[in-house]
Image (cartoon, rainbow, N blue to C red):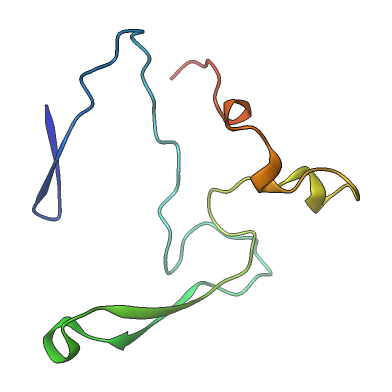
Length: 97
């Protein structure tokens, strides 16, 4: 099975002997994405355009708590792990969709 995003085809990972399925529960990121009511909206400014520069470069200004994200324990409890120190298996689990 292939998935097409903006004209690019991505091959689905069919080599899954355990039968595990992953679901993306993320909100989109960008202007007017879910945010705290009193936080500024995400700002995305184009610095270079494909037509003019041959590359697309953008400056993104945002707060840490915008759209789907996870807080590291260190965000709320001093002396606890930062996000890069949390073992990857802690981000996966079973659920009902």
